[in-house]
Amino acid sequence: MFKRQGIKWKNSRHPYKTEVASIRKIITTIVLTALFIGWIILILFLPYFRIQKINYDGLKIIKQAELDIWFNDKLFSGKIIPWNNYFLVSTNNLTNKAISHFGLEAIEIRKIFPHELKIVIKEKISSVIYDNGQNYYLLDNNGYSIKYLGVVGDDEFKTIPINTTTVSSTTKTKNVVSSTFSNTTTTEKIHLPNFSRLVKDFGDFPIIFDKRKINISENILVIEPEIIQTALDWQRETEKQGIGRVKYFVLDNPAAGLTVYTYKPWVVYINIYKPVNGQIDNLKLITITNQPKEYIDVRYGERVYWK
Image (cartoon, rainbow, N blue to C red):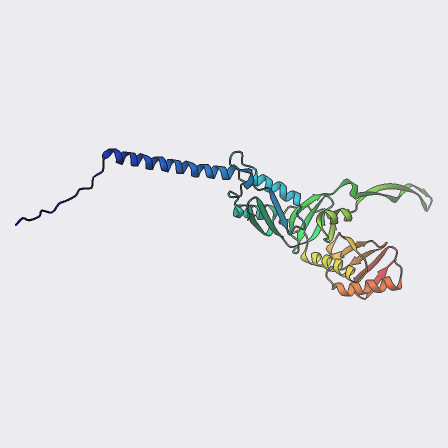
């Protein structure tokens, strides 16, 4: 009998074929990599994917033009890399920088494919426009400055005549002393806040003109919170009760109160530290029963003075 021997097969490839396969693999990898890089470059540099439109929501004090300038500077600052490309825009980075730059309460920046930004802004709670006779600032409810608004214009000053009496000569005859007086007229420039322009440019906030001319910088306490609240309450209640629109408040000495300027021919002297409602009631009573021409003083409780 014959015994069949087992046969072993060896799978070997030709060295030439192996080398060709390796070269093909390398070439394929290079081509795919080049295509991928080219695709990335195409997406980054195509104008279609660059931010072309920015929509804002929630603006009150901050102007859209101011935001446009700032965002354009951040998005279009790249000379080589197009940082305004939809895929390169970092909403987190923009959010942090915008909050710091504009002093915002919050901001939401959302990308809308393929070339749009949606920006929702929540501005800090602000309450009054502060005027120190030189510049305008925005103050929050606690009396801290949060934003510089602009310079006081030259057209916001009025020249008024002032009559003064002086002694021109004095004579003495025996026990009699006689003096001669003369009247002279000089002029003085006084500041009148431009109410209409301020409302148009910055919003319908109470305006406080402080005659003390305090120098202001951002994030410092300027005036007491009680003064802010009094101005807010008076502006709200005078409109609500039909007394008239407050144009602005004048502050000289906090202990002496505020002077309220309206469209009426008279001004109102009010107490900062006493309840507003009682003073409003007295004001309404006087305007109903009398015709003041210069002022109404409601700072002293039940005692009301007018002229």
